[in-house]
Image (tube, rainbow, N blue to C red):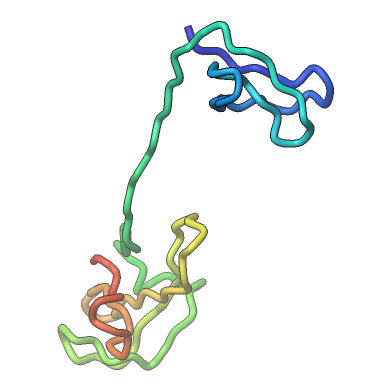
Length: 123
């Protein structure tokens, strides 16, 4: 069974590492020089590779929300010139500021048409 190992000198997490001189796997501290030979020679690695794009989310009745700011953005669906806007709510580190617009007349959700087509978020 895999378990977490901690440094006996500085109490930081020990990470598995190959020691080519001793030809064994050791658990080594990344802060100080401490290492210990691992009794369990099996290393587990779980890579989470999820690629998500900005998504508009649920926009029901956002056009009538009095707390949202309004902007004069032309709706591509009905042509109305009043929309409320809000920022993307994803918590990714590399997220740039994306503003989503919702038409106050037809509740159509869209982004600024001046953005590059390849960087447009999913609707």
